[in-house]
Structure formats: structure tokens, C-alpha cells
Amino acid sequence: MSRRTRPSAASTVRIPRQRGSEPVILVLSPEPQPLTTRAALAAGRWAWKHRRSWAPTAIATALLVLTGAIHVIEPRTGWALAVLALAPAGVWVWGMLRRRPTSRQAVVWRALLAAFATTVGAWVSLAAGFGPAHPALFTVWAVLTLISQVGWLVTRRLTTVTEKGSR
Image (cartoon, rainbow, N blue to C red; front, side):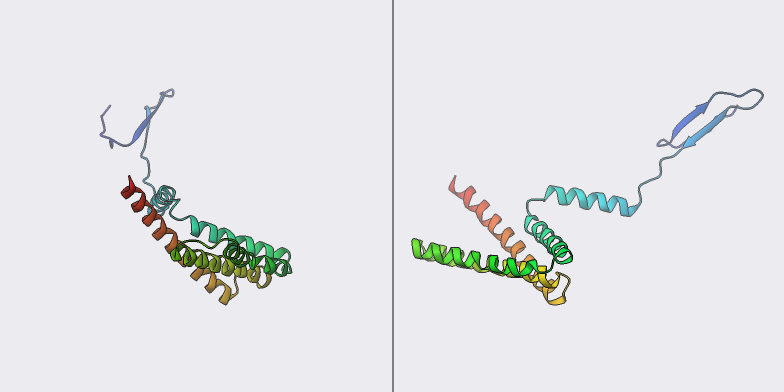
């Protein structure tokens, strides 16, 4: 009986000797994972680690899927959503009439936020009515997603720096 060398990563399975035959030895070597599997696992780990940073993109993607489903089920829902699209601008005007903020920067940020929220509401109502896959609406979705993602990252960075500096 000769001794054979085996790879260190392989596992050996010994099957008991059958009558009148030589012992059977199976050497099973684990196949390495394909490159696509390793890339998908690495991308998944990275996305999970940075999941808070990508929240606006996740919300925008969920809105894209949701408006697509609404469009398929009942496209006339877009008319009801069009009325709700004006709510952020109305809330901003009501807040300005009730009590004006002390700083000019707060007024500008709140106005920009109200305008952005109104634009998103208008997009949702149009996407529910005409479908989010319409080229113009998809382009607007991509631009709004990019604006919200960049704004989110900049705001998080400024907030983190401000919190560290105030301690």
C-alpha cells in the first residue's frame, strides 16, 4: 500500500474495505468560490457596513418600485397624490406666517427643504399616473436621488464635524 500526498485543504473520506477489493479513498477538494460570488459577497458586506450612508438611495429606490406598483394597479391614484404634493410648501408657508425663524440661514434651509419635498411629491404623483419608467420621470428620479444622496452625505459630515468640535 503506497502513501500518496494530498493537498492540505482537501478532506479525505475513507470508505471501509469491501470483500476482496482494495480500500477506497476519496479525496474531496473544496472548489474555490467563483469570482462573481466573492464580488457579490464583498459588495454586500460593504453595503451593510455603510447602510446609513445610503439611506436616501434606498428610499428613492423603494419609491420607484412603489410608484411602479401603484401605476400598474391604479394609475388614477396620481390625481389624489397631486393634491398631497403641495403639502410641504403649504406647511412651510404656514410656519413662516406663524413664527419666523431668527436666522436667515434657517429660512433658506427650510425653504430649500420644502421645495425639495414638494418636488418629490410632484414626482410621486406624476410617476403614479404616467409610470416611473417614463424617460423624463426616470431622469428626474435619478437627479433627485443624486441631490438627496449628496445632500445627505454633506449634512452627515458637517453634523459629525460640528458635534466633535463642540465637545
